[in-house]
Image 1 (cartoon, helix red, strand yellow):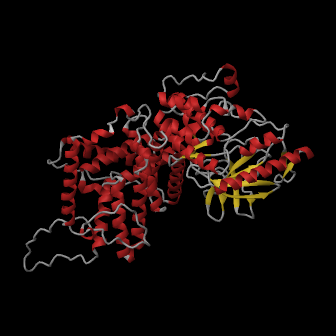
Image 2: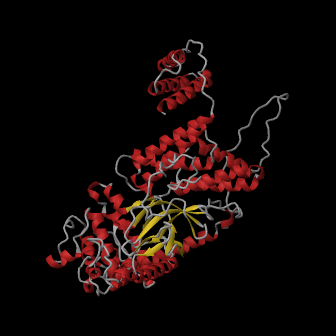
Length: 639
């Protein structure tokens, strides 16, 4: 049975253990029931995403054929139509409303067709659209993350650094240029309609062109504009709109990101003057000028398109950092200065140097004989690159053996397999310390081993997937950019990513203790990474569910046998000898008070056993059993 809140498998219980969604909570009659099938059973409906608007409802959906989550938007203007008696069909309230409803439905489908033709990484992608239940539905990609408006509320002063704000807005402007090239407008650009995905990619959502067209068509239909983000021409019934309309919304969004507040409403600015934009005094002058130009109330004085608006703070062809400017023309060297003797000698020297380097290059061996690591990740179906050469192996030392000793075993495995095993051991020993380039090289080695060792193909495939995924996740800008707080926050996020990838590769073969440690890593990542808190909490719930399921199937833990006290070796440090004595003492007390301790007491005992195991290598297995028993009892006490 699938949970309508996250579409993970769940038991018969109404509350999902994975996401915590309670299916028993009653929903409005305007909302379609859980598990409603649409488009001949192709899609299944789940929970409502966000708050239902006045023109439609967006659901979390499940694509039955592709087995993936989607977002499904239903056209349902509440002022014009409602649900029929079957709680599915949409019907207009009256005959007059039926005309306006049909007009809006046509505009909704027209918008869907236009969006389906757009292909830009920063525009929401439309997968499908269809008519059913007397209305229409729009199927879009679903992204994990949060809106820019939500992200701003979690920042100090509800604002962002200028470079980060520009980094979010520029990809959106690139997408809008493609929208405008198709003859289409967004008409509702604001932080609530910009979505920041878990991969830190801004996505522009919720085009408002259909709503605006309906408001212009029907005088009885009230269209709620976004105060501060809508230009004056959207308030006027005959106001001429174009790309400059979206320029105003983009500039208002940038203003909100750098000042922490939306700009004053356009109608108020018309009355009191266009220069009333508080909060821009501390902003970079070039950026402040760009924002003021984009927020000019008069459409005729505003930048006419997105390219002109971008050029205000990035430059028309060669972008310059804000606050800097290219060399002024009067400071550039004059053309006649190239003919001076000093420049002439410099040119002659450069030409001679180029000729010498060219002759030296011709004497080099061909490129095929020079070993190099390729940075390209390969799939198992691609041929192994012939130019890839393993790192140099140090010479094997000479071993003196007697005549009656057996000869040392000879490793007959292919060189690619031996290299793969060596890199695998290094990766496990230095887990999480590698950078993206190191993981890419490991992926190449595992790819070569996969092609040479067909008996262990599945194992090499898992290692290849792990190395490729880690190469991608460790190179994200999210870890490279400075974050609020100390480096421990970045480390917590990195550890969470690493454990998340490992958990996926393991495919359910972990032990309960391993899932317990993964849950702790995800909790730490959730605290350090507020933009993806929902993602980390979902991973934490999954690890908790797997741990509880394994513990439910496992037999009740039996207490370990007491250890015979021994006299620690004199070669040990005083701290190590004391750790062994303390471990034996705590173990004896734990056995005597079996099951009576609290979770905190078992946690302290586990720490004592770990210190003893580190100092007492001869009885490390016995200490490990004590550690596992204390961990199980501590988890049992927490639950």
